[in-house]
Length: 315
Length: 254
Ligand SMILES: Nc1ncnc2c1ncn2[C@@H]1O[C@H](COP(=O)(O)OP(=O)(O)O)[C@@H](O)[C@H]1O
Ligand SMILES: [Mg+2]
Image (cartoon, rainbow over the protein chains, first blue to last red):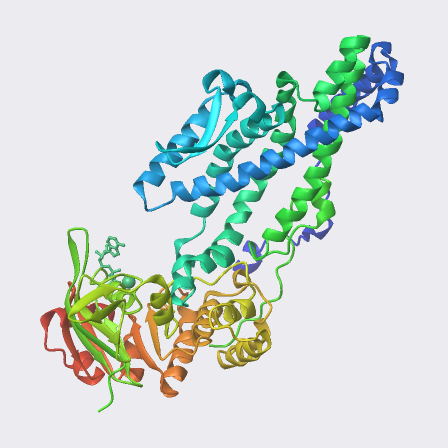
């Protein structure tokens, strides 16, 4: 006879030695992907139309280098214009002043609502709209008058076109970041007697950066590629340079590959830089230790690290 | 007689059409601990926030240590103070919030040092020494370099108290400091506050902890519907309330 407790106690088990679950579908998917990848590599190597020798010849060419520098230069300047103006527009959107809110709202509406290619061409052809540009007192005397065609060079048109467009996107990103910070943070800072400026710099902005940096990283990469649009206004960036070459030599595919590989190299470097900045602004964001840099880079899934020891204090 | 620490007279405050404070008169002497009780929505938080000018009052006047808060009376006319003067006034008044509101991107010691270094221009070394002493005082010397999110609620609130104390305020305002805490963590925060009261700090505490009011308060104020309904020593207000609204409230929280 067994007692009641024995009858109900489950059999002796220890899960420590449990066998791993099998995932046959994962294996099938992996094999399919590997076969497809092998085919792609095979195509890249065996198809003579890629003309890898041409790619190699132009990859380090000096003209290409000059094009890359123009592309990078444009990316940096247009992005800088976008960020600085974006901060101003974002502050306008969050301002107490209704006129500032309306004007900045209209700015975002217009520049996000029209294609950047159109904006570029418009700036480039500004002289058709206003043959002369003058500086002076509004509706009053003018001090300085310039010929629009001389003032708006292709480079300036590109910076204005890309930068003003970017500002609209950055303004929305920055506004979203600022709004995602708990209003209690501003109150706590005010209660400590911190000024508005200091509260913004030391308390609000660093916390907003966690929400601002990732989309800004995407914006930089988009900007890098968007600079290729300036080839339509005859500015010799990376794409324009390779186009100029293949228009002469008809080696279209190999030269486009040269451009693509360079774009990939630069975006890869940007990606690494972004991950560093993101980790900096993740301080204190979670209980867990931040993900290590290499596991981030290797696309490892975030694993929960053990939280720092926290012994309970007696009350 | 010296000037009282807080002198609020006929304080009125509305949000749009909703009149939240309908003429509050309250005097808090130096070293006194006043506990404000009252149902939710009665205007307790609003009153505290008026004292350090997080809200601008619509009528009446609040003086802290003899200085008119948020305004300047000059030749029979009253003007709003500029941002500079308002921040200067707030430095002297500490505030502890229900939700702690620690700065999550700073470590514990950075949270405490931020205002002394950035606002009062103390040297980092001096601010750090005092921050560590304050952490010792609130029993968190071992959490100096933790981030707020790595602490329990009770620990976070004690850091928030240390952060406010680092500005050496002459008055401390507590807005339901234990209401966001798990019950077993309430005691550690109340014990810290009791220590401050014993040290002679002037405090206004909004709380539902009647036990704390009974033990620590010099005076209990009961607010309802934007007015002070009843005020007096804890023994009178808590054990022998005269007003039916006070009685009804106490029967619910006790
Ligand atoms: N910023 C605000 N805007 C509009 N109404 C508010 C605001 N702050 C508080 N109130 C209202 O004022 C009343 C009193 O609020 P509060 O002072 O927080 O009460 P208590 O702290 O006693 O619970 C509530 O009805 C609340 O909804
Ligand atoms: Mg409240």
